Amino acid sequence: MNVLTDNFAIYAEGFLGTVELTVYASLLALALGFLMASFRVAPVASLRVFGTVWVTVLRNTPLTLLFFAVLLGLPRFGIVLPFQAFAVLALGCYTSAFICEALRSGINTVPRGQGEAARSLGMTFAQTLGVIVLPQAFRAVIPPVGSTLIALAKNSAIAGAFSVTELLGTYKTLSELGYNIIWTFVWIAVGYLIITLAISALFNLLERKWGVAR
Image 1 (cartoon, one colour):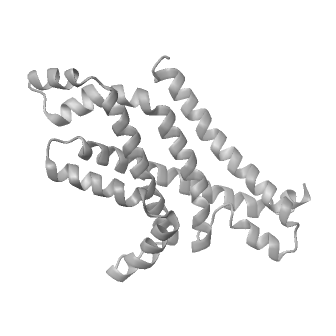
Image 2 (tube, helix red, strand yellow; image 1 turned 180 degrees about the vertical axis):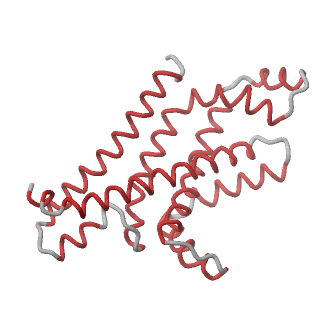
Image 3 (cartoon, one colour; image 1 turned 90 degrees about the horizontal axis):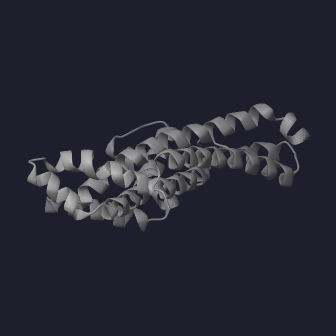
């Protein structure tokens, strides 16, 4: 326990850093994932192509490589942001590809006739998607979206290698102070467990309230 109690401030700073990364990147991933899922089922061919390319590239790019591309590539184009903002951008964009596919699978569970009926009533594509399709699709994709955001929380550990304050990075400081590396990682693991269990509990609550009955 002394590893935790003697260095509680260090652990707390890393824990809060990981929570911030997870929250901000999750919001970005959900927004981009929703947008790309809309593109992938849009009646406009160029939008479908853009959404397909976005998902294909990001799903097949290692996250570490994406971090390097964002942190080292964007400043060459005059885009200079805090390291945490770059990390949120890399994590959010990467995870959005998986959110997109989860949402698209949910959209495909909605009977096509409902969309055709909505269009026959004069509803636009955006109205059909937002009012008819997505509310039903959301109920079907709560578990996979939750699992994807849990993976995002664990993937945030990569940000520590790029000078971003997060939980895993605390081991460097504690190792330099001479603390037992095993117990250092035990308490780091406990911190990640708290975060992932909180996300899991939130999505279990959403599933009980709005999920599709099996």
